[in-house]
Image (tube, rainbow, N blue to C red; front, side, top):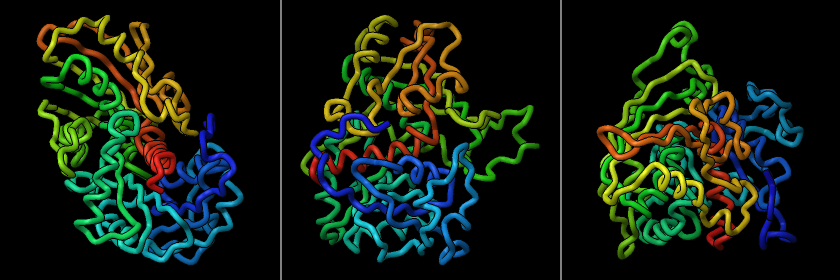
Length: 359
């Protein structure tokens, strides 16, 4: 989805390196970088068992289209600096990311991370570009505190959080949020490959995803918080989450109930969602969806199979908006966990960092 390329036209693409390039999210990134107007893939890095091998041989490609030929011939490097690139996008497991990402930042690389390792550190921006781009300002605090020169770490949220926060942001701005209750039905691809054993998830729902409920209950308040004197004040609303794994390949469905500070009807909620646009849309960033929120009025939508690829997988699709008997409003939303929830989220953050002059 390479639309308006704004002011970057005519400049040489930045060389980008992908950490965790053999995983499902890394593969999505490699595919999304083909023909990108800002970035050219120049390096792939992965675990020790892949280091030194051709990417085409080391990567068990799982996407329904061919591996890009330019990527296939790259030699897999170790997840440590130096790396032959200008910018890092990381999709490492959190235990590896916790030391690898700061090491790259200390070595002068801008790091855009899909990992949970550093998300909640108070000097690390946790950014959804349409919602809180001003939080990139924490980079200055991070550099001063950690002694980084040119490097830094910026993160994107958990896949379920991103879909949720895109819907919550315009509602918080217009009506104010008091409390949110969310039940997620999350696709098996969110567990990586090979992920959840088929004999566990087929004909079944697994009502536990390790660490997921804590992320969904704490990340939205950081994202919707405000900068104050170089620090961040988290938003005060509360979130209660219950997270389930279901036998869907891609697309996280979420049932959400919301209590507002100010009265809001279902019609007003729908209007606020449909009107929402952010800085990526204003700038015409290549991966930005024209509509970050798409409202469906059918009684049985959104559905993962029918709606996850809306806006090339970069939108949150919202439906079933109605009055609630306990909270104020209830709705159902859907996000593509592998695109907007992971690879596309990191790539859009990288584009916005370039467009705003931080890279």
